[in-house]
Image (cartoon, rainbow, N blue to C red):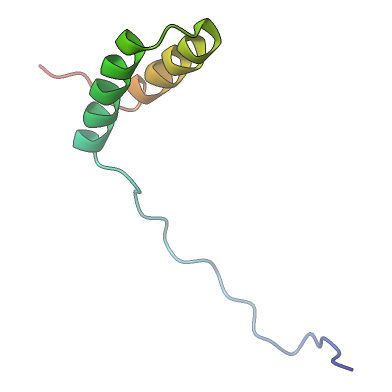
Length: 63
């Protein structure tokens, strides 16, 4: 039987790294836009629109 001991040193988690770049968000939004134009499912379209909006909040405005 294995027992857990509290002898392991406590370490801080490493620094978080970005998973996507700004260009990735733009690409994902573009792909979602094209997919939304092809689907007839209203529930799916609502989910796509919500995701599209959430992704848009991460893309800084240009200009």
